[in-house]
Length: 178
Image 1 (cartoon, rainbow, N blue to C red):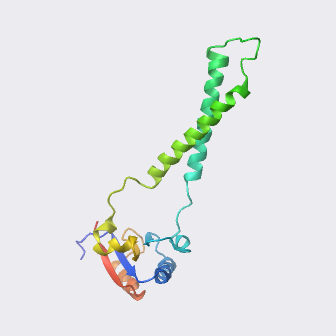
Image 2: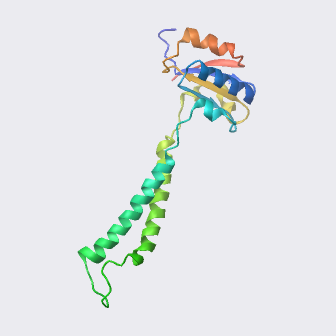
Image 3: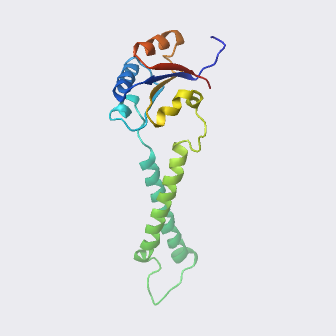
């Protein structure tokens, strides 16, 4: 088994409660690189799996602010610096006139930042994941509850992790090939 490369172990459980119990046990044992899969969101599971803090709000905020600032600065540069035009003695820098374009560019850039950030952070498009190699994983979208422990975890030792997973009473445990 030493020459066999594996991505990790995938355990299937019969109910949401047993999956959450198993995830808590895996977390308590010190595993860091593990994930849980279920057909619907399970309350409390994301805290156990320790999902990272979302970065999307920051990305959308920075995109929106940079869009608004660039729109405002572009209007200022055009009307006051590059092509000053005196119209009826009005000031060259009349910021209330710049508000509609600034607002629109803020919204536009925030929306583009949200779409591009979502695609990048989700790792999309991702047509392949190693758990797809396990035929039983097809039921993850209908009625399957799965827990995967990756072999890159520092705690992962096949001779210790496999008996530990078996002690959690799963329906089945599968090796995940890369």
